[in-house]
Image: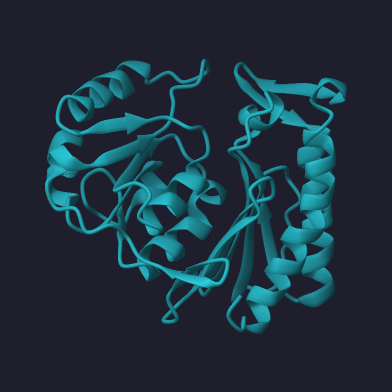
Length: 260
């Protein structure tokens, strides 16, 4: 792995420590205690335990930083720096023994993501980036794909969950995209989908109804790999509008047209 900055080192240590518990629980899926957060949207003791481990590690190294975390472990300290944490992005996959989920940690400075890390503990793949320093998968530099023709592209997406009230919009968008691209995939982890865009494994991803912690780390990883991140209209309001489009920067206009 290339020499990491101090903040990335902190993130790596937190990811690796939390992953030990996740790997153990992943091997004992049937024994997991599960409580429902809502229809089709679950939270496990593993989520909460992983988040606690991550927060403890981050606060130990950076006690002055603030924290925004999916399971409610928020900390209000610095107005300049804030960690954005999703302890298991892809919880439903995790619950069903599907090895496509990740720990996602982003770091804000003055409301801008300056570094991010996405770690799949089952495959031991760590995607990370820092502003102005490129994006990496383990010890190798990564770049987005070079495909320019949308009909040659593979597009990832997500949803809808049972609880979504905008299913018809999602189905309509999916049909339009599917009719115009080589293939679509729905794998169940937005952060890993963004990491796959960054590494050229797919050409774009789009999704509605996402939270900030789902995409914070992916934003910097995609952009540092040469991609672009916008909302469905090509603007930077993806957090406010809760929809995101991450591409290889060559098929933006085609996808924005299809999603409009």
